[in-house]
View 1 (cartoon, rainbow, N blue to C red):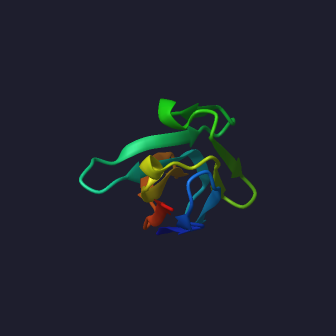
View 2 (cartoon, rainbow, N blue to C red):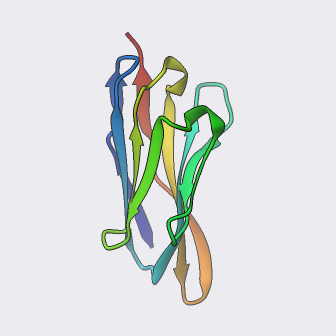
Length: 119
């Protein structure tokens, strides 16, 4: 089994910053892609940013220049630094990890962490 533990969500004023973390542990040989998704109330879950095992990053247009995704391979942890937060960034944020075990790739999801941007 693989567990993902997320942390770092909370309430922040517009223009503020938060840093999300997601640490993976358990039976896994290696981690391939890591990413962050978000789901606002009444909306579908969508990709915010992801990072490959070699460090190639992707961002959805609405967060480019404000969010930064990074990973620490030694700690099996992915981060999302969120700056200049806007009310429309309010959502539950989920991390996603693609892990390899014995030549098989599996997808794992974190439990979600609430981010609320409000004055």
